Structures are given as C-alpha cells and as structure tokens.
Image 1 (cartoon, helix red, strand yellow):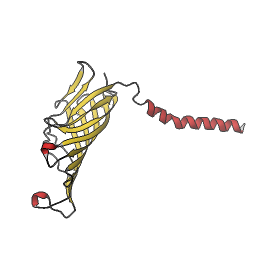
Image 2: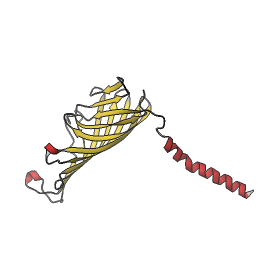
Image 3: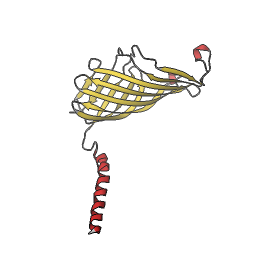
Image 4: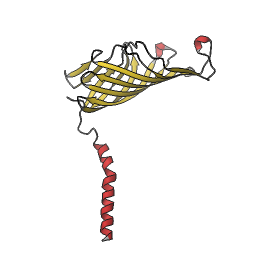
Length: 196
C-alpha cells in the first residue's frame, strides 16, 4: 500500500515539474511569424539629457580640454515632440499594416557608454510604442556603434526583443537593431501573435 502511494506521489511530482517546461516548448507554437520593421523618429525633439559623468571621475569633458577615457549617460530620453516614427507589419504579399506619427506615441529611456580609446558606443534603449486604438509594444534594444569618432566609417550592430498587446492579442518580437541614414535607428525582425 505504501509503495503504491509513493509511486502515485512520484508520478504527480514528475507531471507538476514538467508542466512549466511543456508550456515553454509550446509557447509560440502554431503562431505565424510576420516580419516587422520599426523606425525610430529621425527628429528627437526636446530631449532629456539624463545624468552625465566622465571616467576617470575627475576628468573634464573634451570640449573643456579634458582627456577622459569614457563618458556615461543614464536615464536620457527623447522628447514628446519627436517625429518620424513608422511601424510596418508585413502579412505577406501586398497585405501589410502601416502606422506612422499620427498613430504612434513613442517614449523611451536610454543609457549610453562612450569609450574614446576604442571609438565605440554602447546604447541600451527601453521603448514604449503606443498605437492609437490598437494597443502597445514594449521593446528593449541593445546596440554597439563602432567608429563613433569617424562618422564616415560608422556602423552599428545590435538586437532587440519586445512584447505587447495588439487588439487584445499578446505579441512577441525579436530581431536586429541598428542605425542608418536617412531614417535613424531601426528595428527589423519578426513578430508572433499579431492579429491577422
């Protein structure tokens, strides 16, 4: 009798431990992956400069004749009057949804680390894209801009992930983040769960 109870308890424990794993494997299964392109506005408006400091801590900024190793910016943001935002969700063929400045309210907070000796800059951006009457998308992009001190050779590498709710449906996003003329920062990737 005790052996039967023990086996039953063990079987239940295995099922309970496996349930979250099975849920993770099933997440996104059967959902169509659509391509998504998000353009961050080319005009930043009245930006919040955030908190700025230099390393070493007693170094003056370069414009004052100092020679710091790096500059750090925390909790900066783009102004409410920023423009040039675009979201395109490609549903295949000629069918796509497009949202622009009239539809999108965008807010963000970002941190920057610029290393003068290496000539690269790391930026982490937390973004909120609110689409009027449809819902919202939250994204986090992490990018490295190389050759910052030589704009002719500037290039960017990065990624983004995101989630949100559109028309009551949960959506998940991921892809490449970068910066390029003439649009400015972009996110290009896939979205799952978008209502079609």
